[in-house]
Image (cartoon, rainbow, N blue to C red; front, side, top):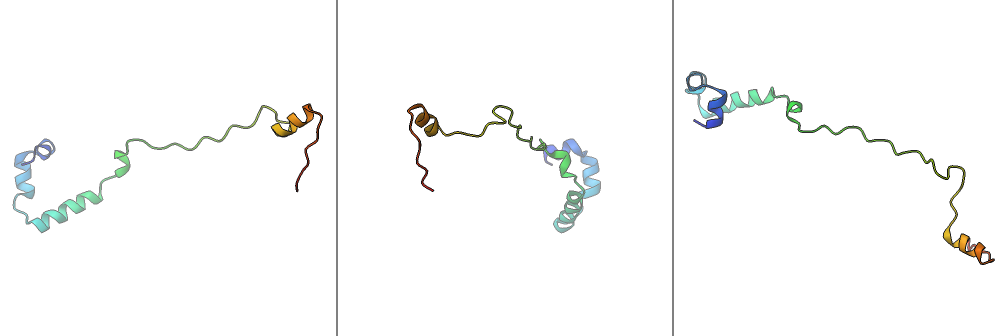
Length: 83
């Protein structure tokens, strides 16, 4: 007998229930037992819902200005848009 099974089922009970079954009958019993197992009980960790991305608080009213535009303004030039 396997040591793990012996912890769960006593030797006497094992022989009475499963000792005289064929391999096919034993497979059917094990499949029937496996269908009743609730796998959710054995999950290690449930993933929680994703956290929403934080709302923008800094520079909320200002739009983005490129670094090239800032440098051009500081040098007194204007950038040519190629659109």
